[in-house]
Length: 120
Image 1: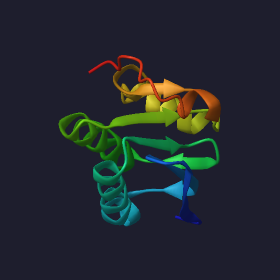
Image 2: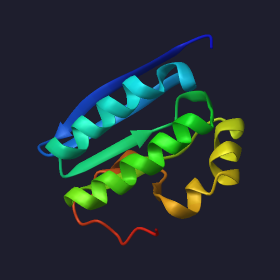
Image 3: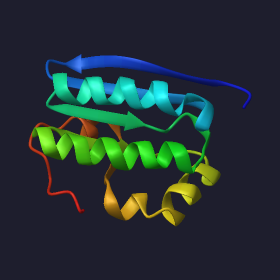
């Protein structure tokens, strides 16, 4: 892995956006999962923005699925913001993430308070 980091912002009360920057794989899975799970229980909305991601592997995609389930269990919303490298979009598509997660394509839609019904 060359570069893996994330940035957490709180654009409004009760909402957290985690922007994944660079490449993300098994080496950061546990830390990322802990951050996302913590945000899910303290916010009514968590958005994971992969717009600036260069690569995500299956372990990170599984973290997204797990955090989505966790959010639903605690009554929070979980959204995936796309607009990313073709390789990342393809990995998410092959894994079924684009069908199983609530996907938006811009920050305005990502931060809407009234959740749309998410599949899965």
